[in-house]
Length: 244
Image (tube, rainbow, N blue to C red; front, side, top):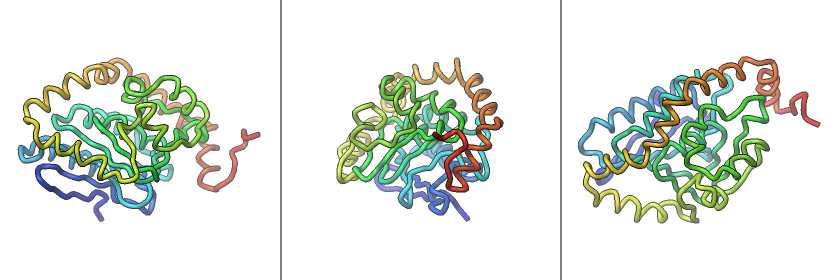
């Protein structure tokens, strides 16, 4: 069973996360299929830009707690999006949690409907938003990140736009994206690739400098007793033992 849907219209490839039964959680299988689809787009001269979207009411719930993804695999996927020589545009109409926010930050442009909600839920299960910080820290308001990283609070699309997590929000996400995709279709492939290279240079510096340390931090935290309690509590739909 495929976990990724693909369509193309006027040189824009739409890749949809299509595992709604587990809220498009980042399993090894889904990440592998997404990475393959992105690699195909990178090599295809007929693709001018990529839209990353989803089926169901959740863009991505983050890590698949029943089958955790190794942090190296997530680092590889995020870097692949950042380095892709075609612009990658996120289209969000549902909820985004934890690792799913890393996907958004890796994209060049992101648009969300007002139905979308966002939360860095890692602290609620005993871990930290480590690997996803690679694209997030250089693209998002630091004061906002401090609040939402530390509290795990849910916030809406307007706040996501205010803090730079998404580019724009609106009632109709496709209406928001219409001028964006029109602009990309009118742009030279060479110019898009080189302009993206300029825009992502600082993000890639963070990957080169910090990826190994953040990968080790993520692995250590996920193996900890508090993370085991936090994940068990989440799956059992109860408060963890430290909640007061």
